[in-house]
Amino acid sequence: MKAKHRRIAAILVLLAAAAAGYLWLVHGPTGTAVSPPAADSSSPSPSSRQSILAAETQPPADRPTPTPAPVYQVEAAQPDEAAGCLQRGLELMNAGKLLEARGELSKAIFSGALDEAQAEQARAAAAKVADATIFSPQIVEGDPYVFQYTFQSGEILNKVERKLNLHVPPQLIVKINRLPNDRSIRAGATVKMVQGPFHAIVSKSHFTIDLYLARQGLDPVFVRRLKVGLGADGSTPVGAWKVGQGKKMINATWFPPPSSEIRRPQHPGDPNYPLGKAGHWIGLVGTDPNTAPCTGYGLHGTDDPASIGRAESLGCIRLADPDIEFVYSLLYEEWSTVQVTP
Image 1 (cartoon, rainbow, N blue to C red):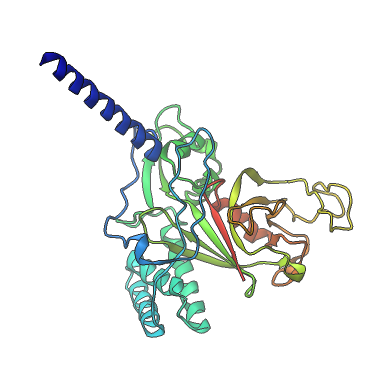
Image 2: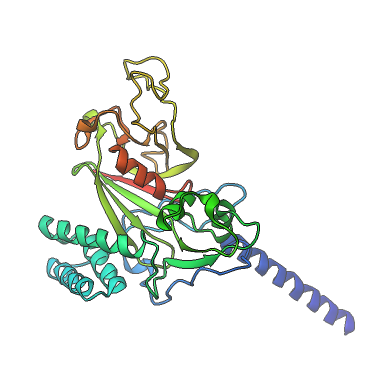
């Protein structure tokens, strides 16, 4: 009997160890300081929505295995329901209830049921609310996407971001907190953190990129619409992409595709360098059957601002210099997704 009890105890220990290993893979190692708030369990389940984007991601070797990337989801809504969300969002914003306003405005935008004038009004209001709740040093009580973190002795921002699995570039944290640089954070400093990742939707017909914040278990939050330039003759492939590991660069060297008349790689300062003043490059990796075979595509700045809003590039997605700098500060390697729609 005692031997039987020992066998049962050993099995229980093994099961407990397996469960602990699974939790580590899903959630990563636990931090020692302030932890981000838990997701709101009252959020609608993904199965209740129509998904536009559901790209799988592959993590770097030293990061915990991600769940499927957060999705840009569209609430099934009639035009009058969407208009009601917009109206409530505007009223809540005027009343200073920013989180509630953010939810209603994002819901209205993501519904796809607003007319163009309403959608423009909703996007403008949502951008203002995003600036106040996400991109400012202030924290609105109850916001599930942000929290405060107090730095311990010896900690640096890069490692803290990784420890907390924020999935946002450290430079965004620096900008939000109005810091001169990441080295200015000292032990004991309390800093606003944002839980990402951010994602993007590119509309070829509208020459726009919509940026939004979405984390598993939380409702997506619209933050900005910007204008883009696209590939001539429809050469920007439609489908799902992710930001590739090691594919975000500043002062990037540009390698001309075979279709280009330029034959040599171009470096910042070269007369034919096309990536804009700072050379921002965000390389993309295809994640569906249509985009997976495609290589060499990305988002970048441009030396030709007049091309924004037109189909004149060799296939990549180009933005004005201030806009690509903003996008660069949001999108995170391996976790941020970019959906290109017709």
